[in-house]
Image (tube, rainbow, N blue to C red; front, side):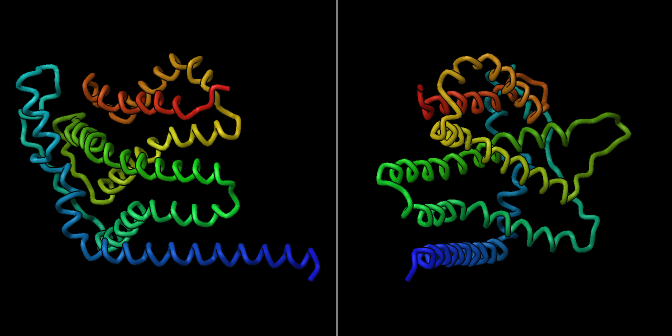
Length: 263
């Protein structure tokens, strides 16, 4: 067999392996989506719409802290509750399907990274395998940590501010199901991606684009940018909420420095 034929066979072998990787990922995604679809009434009532209720744990904790620290936002003075409305006949069913798919995709992220790792690992050297293995593990942990921060802090504070904001007493807020779920998924997934900053910094460092000197040189600029980003994410106006978002972002910036080469 000629060298060209061997190379062609090797190429098709890689395509076949990639096909099986994609097939396994799709099968696992469908299975998790079916489970999420079956459990969606419980997930929706207990998890997704929990920040729309006054007894959400963050509001209760801030209410307790507000008695000792007056500068914290007041979570005790009013009974907060949001009733979601639906104005399209098919919206609830299609939102049921799409939300189940999104949740399944989020939960199988570690498995997707594992399949990617298993696909590329034969082409790596031993030292590269160790580095990439830890990178994938860190990426999974940081993604879920970011989603948790988004769900427990960022989305509830943003929701509470926007739902109680009033331009005029004549205007009454009615939150639609699509609007609520769009903001819910966007903020939580955005925070999950933001928490990948250390992994992205490590990857850029490995290919020689980022150095530690970059972070040290532009630290002041980064602080200003992160403050602006925190203000955009949570436009509540109070310093406590601003710091609640800014501190994790700045912590990610400093954590990224540890993963970047000096030279």
